[in-house]
Length: 349
Ligand code: SAH
Ligand code: SF4
Image (tube, rainbow, N blue to C red; front, side, top):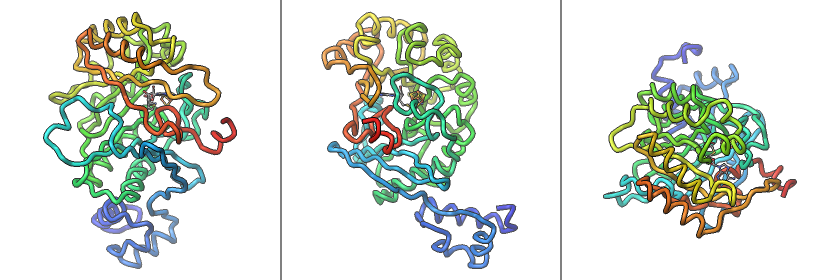
């Protein structure tokens, strides 16, 4: 608040009002003197919680929100009342009777990475979100569900729209806001990246950081390039080399996500090759298998349940823990890789 010539504790009071008391606008922040509030308004400060402008509720309880930004765009955020199954199995749920929920957060509007199976890619990159807009999604959803952090176990996954490591500074600033102002521990956050190596190397230096997930999605560079052209820039070997630089906390594992595309990357020999690559990585890791979620204009198919099961079995056979992520909110386009502005979905679908 240096530019306002107000004491530093005023900034703390403002953060408290927004992030803890969920005040909607400056008028409600009565801990700040009226003169200061008026001065802020006259200088064009825009203070307040992001507004949920539209919500969609799935039959499985998942909710998807469109949250308005100041420039008339919307960002998408997903609330999963009982997690998505993907984070299970690491022992972290043992001994707690707190109900848990997962919020899936966006880091950009659209995405530049162009993965062929992902609906968000079709938007291209529209813009980066600011740290406030990233953290604000969480506050808006907590407020909607009247969640008291501490009374409910909240996990955050940065797996919504966008590539967090292509908006590195704002993303990490949002993480710090969420830890310091809202009180969600970073160990309950997971960031997923398509493999932006310079971002992973910076991440390795962070003192406060979420857990790391890597979207692998293919057993080798050739197959990965077909569906994730970014592989031409950073291949699997360099990607794994970068991941190895991240100092892990005790018991922490790196997640490797693998979207199963029917007949394309879901064969048993693909599973065996993935197993070999990951064994060679020699890291504490686990695999999350995600059955591809369909979207308009994309010509992939979903793997059948037997194939999924066999794939999981072959990975486990290599002594690598493997989980199948339950698809959440597919009917409302809230599942992984389905986030795209609804107006356009209607046109496409
Ligand atoms: N950009 C980051 C995070 C957002 S995408 C990343 O790519 O990792 C989150 C996850 O959803 C990634 O693992 C991605 O591979 C997966 N995904 C994308 N489109 C999907 C789809 N249509 N069905 C299932 N998973 C998808
Ligand atoms: Fe971007 Fe992730 Fe979608 Fe790839 S999968 S286009 S990196 S959001």
